[in-house]
Length: 168
Image 1 (cartoon, helix red, strand yellow):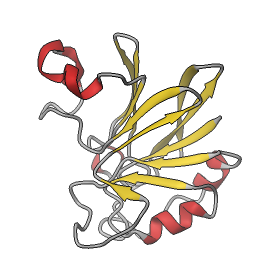
Image 2 (tube, one colour; image 1 turned 60 degrees about the vertical axis):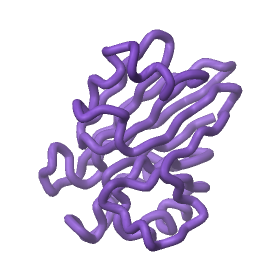
Image 3 (cartoon, one colour; image 1 turned 180 degrees about the horizontal axis):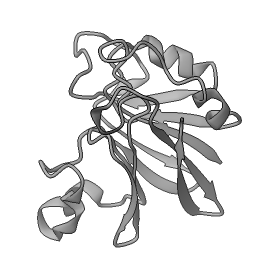
């Protein structure tokens, strides 16, 4: 199973459209997970032309707009692995939330993979045996208006691997 991971598109709030190379990188994926800050939900329609889409609501997303694909977070099982899709990880430090065991254990209990956004920084890491993936921002890497990054998550035989792809 191949899953496209994207986050922090901020369309049209900060940029006009998705990078053109995105369709090539996501070609053949079975599912696309958007980790929030979509801003215009028409972006999900564009992504859905490639594959089915689920999204976490970001802090810049409208709360008054209903879209069945969008929830505050999703907890789903893919290829036998439990995945949590969220926008803001549970800490103001934005990325190092998982380095302090005690307060964050409840967030990742019964989870094999966490996909998150908000920080605009691509990163793949592990907390204990949990794969952590921030695909970065497809349109605003490090808050600069240019093509950024996405990730491909591959799940085979109950094992997950993620790779970051540059869109430039």
